[in-house]
Length: 267
Image (cartoon, rainbow, N blue to C red; front, side):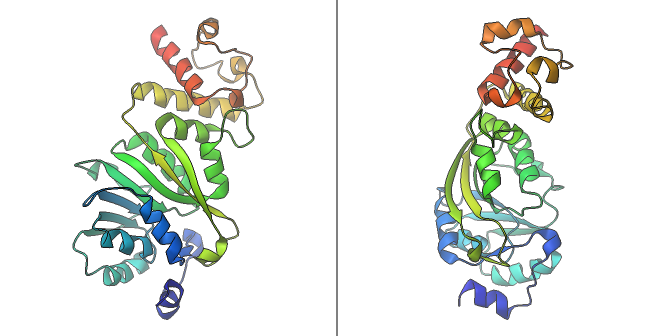
């Protein structure tokens, strides 16, 4: 039975307030799972399993899955669908409020068809606060994927680009047509991967992201104005090859990191 027919025969009713768009294209599901590139028994964290189409595939590949679903109405459906798998842990909770300190043991892989209403906020939270996640396989709005992978000086470049590239290596994999979902969203989605390695200067990277956020709030202003209250010694900018007359979108993630390092060297 196709995923679309399975949903039609069930009691599932997508909730607009939760940005529920259920993936029904099983070819896309298989392509997403292939991108995990994990090993037998690896730990997967999934947010928003929905009807369980990805969860089912991952469990069949012998991954261990912790799935966080905010919709209580879907939990019983997921329990029935996944009952033959002993290595699944279903949690009914808002992913923005979950205590990610509970992710113990070896490194984790994050897999999600991210709900549009929390996607960007959740990714930033995980990237900056949950270092045990070393790989992300996510589906987001195409516009969000473009922003995460954008280069300095381009229209899509912003604070989301900076944080994504300071902590991970984002890579766009493929687009997903709206017809692959029920209900059909109004936008194209994109599947992308983010690979996180062990990173030096973790505190400086967080500071660099905070500086970028402040700078992009006044993106038309030069750095000497937008960052004037951040305790920066602009006289040191020449030493790191940056001009105080540049604007937020002209500074690369690595250059934001250089600014953060120079601030720490001053203190």
